[in-house]
View 1 (cartoon, one colour):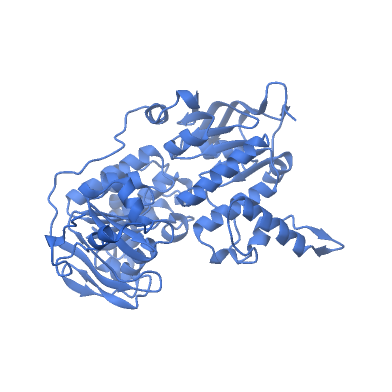
View 2 (cartoon, helix red, strand yellow):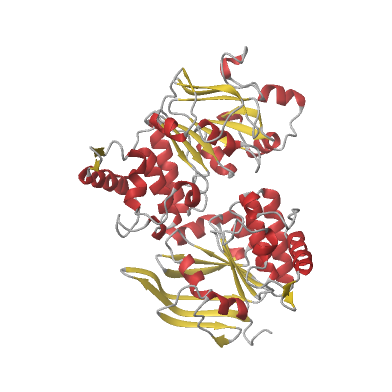
Length: 523
């Protein structure tokens, strides 16, 4: 039931300190019934800390929280859930070894007479999955689901709690455009039921579309709230970072060299007949919808996935990597999309995570040269502008953007010939994103080749010298920069190009395969 001022949540002068770091300082914030209130800010701005305070995960140092007109202080997450607050965290809180039903009803399975009512649980789970547009068997094990499917299961779980305040932390970070549209439809239905939503996202265009109001945090402090009709991308970014950012980087005027990586007719159970090349100092973007096969292709090149047929050439010599360690020794590095599960050792120090790929070069006689380790890590902290308390702190203590920079530092330490970057700005704020873009251009100007996989078309268009488009495990187009626009890429990514365009687009850009155009596409 609404309170008199129509606010479901009011936050006054909230502060929280972690050791020497002031995570929140005198933050004021409010949410109304039936509205989507976006919360934005750079990584490290305090968004996650504020969410955790509201969810009972951490305790505030000072300040007051009113929920449904009453002062509350949740000492544990269960108390917040019982009061009507649910959180969909960016890092999904799921048990992969259990099935979907068990994850949705974890800790609250319907029961009677000492037995679990499995049919009731399955029926309710199916209803929740239908609401988010996910057509899967509720008895499937979560470990068999894709990241995007797991994200939708987590949203379904939150909906099943019938909360009056739903906090969504990057809820569509792994969703396709179709799944995102369905998510927005779900949000609109929730608003009609007077459910309030705090929506945290780094995608500002998306925030402008879905939010009724937008509040900005910077350096742990509240910087203001904008109504939807008075907000703009530039205004929000300026409030977030306090400075102007270059949001799109054009082509840097350096020379593109000889072919560094050449892939010929590479085939596995996850992609087929893939051919392309990447030259020295060239950034080649890989675009496509979820399931197109881009990440699987990258993992195969890096020696993680097995191929059935085809050839890979590095600097003109055929290579076959049966393990990533072989690829690394040959000068390949890979920044993976799921950095927390696949790239970083979250419980170990930031220093270790930076040098782990180069420990052999920093050791002698089985002993690590600490002086060289410190020199290397300090250099990359400065070069990449990594914000941290101490190199000895666990990498889990860093913000998402700084964790990503730590992963980049690891691969830059080996002086790579080719850097594979799979969703390098996933879950990264605009400031860190601009830093990563600048770094990519610097690396390319130094002759390093980059294979860029991204679901964000503006990123692909801004950063790529050429674009490889994939659809249903196959390459449907290789486009020169001047041929690229969102409409063209989407056409080939969805497989709707006409036969004439498809014939031209399927040209590989590899001289020995193309008898016309010297690797150019005639469009």
